[in-house]
Structures are given as structure tokens and as C-alpha cells.
Length: 372
Image (tube, rainbow, N blue to C red; front, side, top):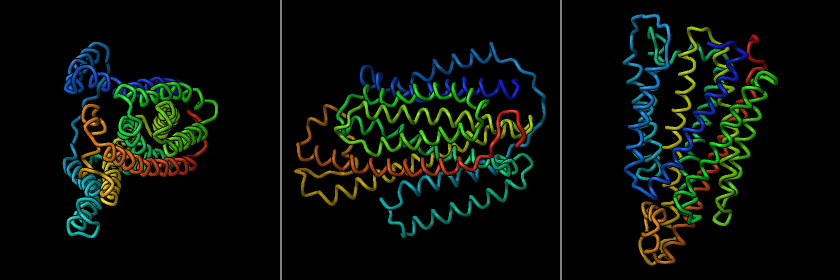
């Protein structure tokens, strides 16, 4: 719809809207949980969905070239099985099952077989779920792999920052939600500036600045402790939001400027898929790390508590009425264990921030509208 120069600005607006909606959800969720009921976290999707349908019906007008497509059912099934297997492996490996148990080895074999079959099948499918030929462009390859790593980071922060603020800092769900909402301030501001920066300094420099922000924000989380306070957590969230706003907009515009008009839909979808895949893998990987480290800590320090504690006991720190029923020794042990375990999570987030910055450095130097 838009020229290459206009597209950067419009994508900035779109990314800012997505950024606001993606991270204000936890804040709204905190309000609903604290003052209404957790059930409404799910019920609120119904009126929002209805409003979306009405808006699309009234305002989205397009010329559609009708064509019979062949749905890649086999590819969809193979990627579903491979990703699900990988998730299960990351969650249970090293915790419920040892890494050299037959269950874990079986999951590894199943993952390798299904992902290999997926790659093999996609190269022969008429309309593949994941067309690998577009990955031959270096800018698309780097953008997609970096979207995977930033997706892991994003889910790590979104999922575990409220846990740290509530469980370790002993703040309310509203405060925990608003520390994460700081990301929704940084994200749209950065997305808007990203649209302008792309036309002036190009994709690579814009993305590098965003990658640096992701690294700085991750370092803030690594240095966070119980006495840091929610403002420190909000600062890290804000800086990561800036990084996400700059990189996500630059990636989308870069990808859409690289491929032909007919491929823009599938190229954009591939990038969003990689970020969603990063979210999926990140939730399993980081959740598994948290459970594993917390379980080891509680077993090693079991003698310090007056009552038996498990990984599930950590959820008691998130409920004010149940936290007060814990003995002081149990509460302190859980908080110390949760602090150390979450630091492991944030070290992994920092690692992926560093990987993201390194990957971004391989993006070709060019501006919107210029040749690769």
C-alpha cells in the first residue's frame, strides 16, 4: 500500500500499537486479579474479539485475487510435533527426568527426526508452511534468527519479572504489572523513532542501537535484587522496550523491502513465526531453568526450613494471604531460592541479548528503498 519511504513510518506506528497491546495486558491483568477475579483475564478477550471483528468488517477493504491454495498439512503437523517435543524436553529435562534418561533421549530422537523431516518436506511442498528460499537473503536470515532470540528474551521478561517483583520484592500484583508496563512506554516511542531512523541512518545502525538497548536492559535485570525496588525493575523493562521497538520495526521493513510484493505476506509471517517460536521455546527453556535451579536450592537447604518445601511452594509467595501463613524461615528460604533461580533466568536472557547484538552486526548496510 505504501512506498518504501512511507512504509518505515507506517510500520513504526503499527509496531507501537502492537507494543502497547502486548505489554499492557499484564498491567490490566494485575488490576483484574487484585480487584475483581482472575477469571476476567480470559473473559475480557470476548468483547475485544467482537470489537475487532466489527472494525475489520467495516474498515478493511481490499482487492483479493482468488486462487486455490494447497494447504501444507504435513508440514504443519511436523512442525507442531517437533516444537512440542522440544518444549517438553526443555521443561522436563534435568528436572523430572535426568538428561541421560531414556525419556529424554527418546524426546531428542523424536525432535531430530521430525525437524529433519520438516526441512526435507518443506523443500518439496508446493506451498510450504516455511518457504526456505527466502532465507537465502542474508538480511532476512539475520532478522528471523534474531527475532527468535529476542522472542526468548521477551517471554523471559514478561513471564518472570512480575514473579520477581511479587515474590522477592513483596509488591502487589498491580505494582508487578506496572513494572512490566514500562516496556509499553519504551516500545512505542522507539518504534516511532525507528521509522524515522531507518530513512536517515539505515537498517543496520537502527538495529544495532536497538540491540545495544536490549543488552543494557538485560544487564539491569541481572543486577536486580530484593532491595533494588520496583523502579529498578521498571527501568530494565523500559530499556528493553526501546530495544524491541527499534529492532522489530527495522526487521519488518527490511524484510518487506527485500522480497517481491507477492512474497511480502509469507516473509512477514515467517518473521512473526520465528518470534512466536522464540516465545514458545523461551517459556519452556526458562521455566525449566527456574524449576531446576529452585528445586536444587531447596533440596540443598532443606534443613534451614521448619516445614518441607517444593518448587510449587514458591507460588505461595505470590499470594499475600498464604505468604503470611509461612514461617519466617520458610519464607526467607523461598525468597532466597527464587532470587537465585530468577538470576539464572536473567543470565540466560542476557546471553540471548548478546547473541542478538552479534547477529544484528551481520545485517547488510542499506536504507529503505535501496538495493541490497
